[in-house]
Image 1 (spheres, rainbow, N blue to C red):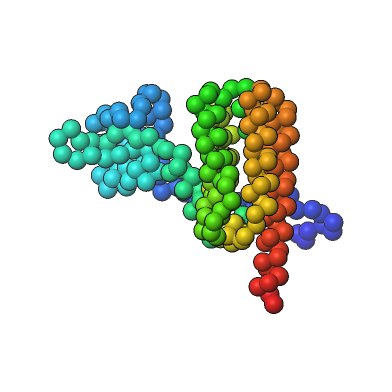
Image 2 (tube, rainbow, N blue to C red):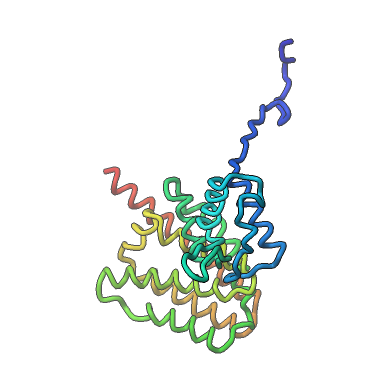
Length: 260
């Protein structure tokens, strides 16, 4: 029967290809679920019966592959010798961020895409810290700013100062009580550090950029210290808008030079 004129294709019309999961991956998921169900913590040893093929009705080779999957994900750690075994590992944020960076290694997001998210999340982050920073945490952020207070003597020093400015935002994210929000903000900062297009911009000489960044960050710390969440959010939003405009303009200028 021919398709009726004007008929729109719906999701139901699109064939769905269901990929069968590999057995080691399925077993790895089951072991992971059991770790969670039993409340095992980093450093705890997996019970011996959990790492026997009979427990999962699979071959020894399949179980070995499943354990490799868990270890590659940073969820477990294998130790040999006396006192050895398979132990629950602690997945560090840095490790997870590096894996996500690699996900975008060959097809990185655009600067505009990154800042579309930063303009939403960074103000939330700033507001969440208002009135909540301890004296040591506040001193840590001030120390980050001091790294780029002075005029850079060389191009290399100016680049290091740009990285220190990003480190300031990373430090803010580390202090966030909302771990998910903090992690997402740290990931975006990591992308900016790793992307070749961004590094090209950061390596360009621009003394005004440092002064602008200092202005926003000093004002931000004052608002956070005063417990003014609304002002902290506003300052950060303006900071992100200004940073986005600068990054996009510099990228276009560099493209123009390259095309000549």
